[in-house]
Image (cartoon, one colour):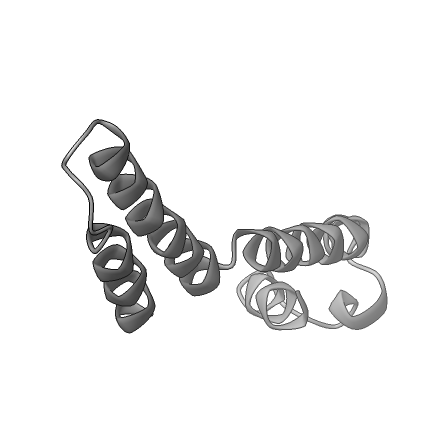
Length: 89
């Protein structure tokens, strides 16, 4: 990724013309695009939110059985039930 940013930046610097406002603007833009791609590729924002939503949905489905003490929580003590709830979610 850093090679991509460096290559486009060096390519933008080599315009072969006099320095005008377009040169630095082109250089900045050509550096900003790969850097933005690096951040989106590394952090994967949508993927993380998908897994967080999946965990929240699982907790929401399991919570009524935990509160009522039914299903897998029927024979568990008050100390063991939260551990089972956490493991199942």
